[in-house]
Image 1 (cartoon, rainbow, N blue to C red):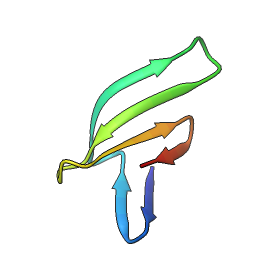
Image 2 (cartoon, helix red, strand yellow):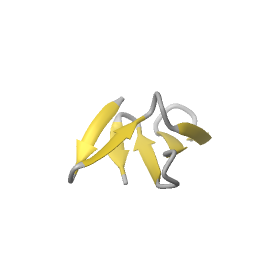
Image 3 (cartoon, rainbow, N blue to C red):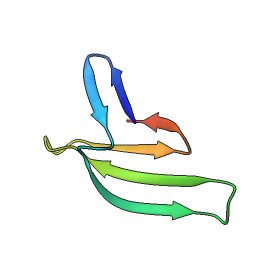
Image 4 (cartoon, one colour):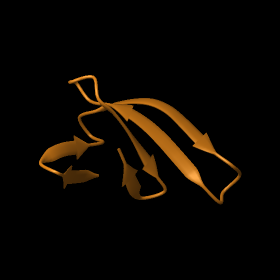
Amino acid sequence: MKKIINGKKYDTETATRLADWNNGGYCKETLYQKHTGEYFMILGRTLVR
């Protein structure tokens, strides 16, 4: 997933995936870290910074 928010690029293909969490199928969260050190999270298919 690639997305630009407020001029900042977030790309799950180039970021490092740090952790995954799933509550049994209803909700999935994945934490990523960019090469700049910034963290972001994907909730299902929604980007949270």
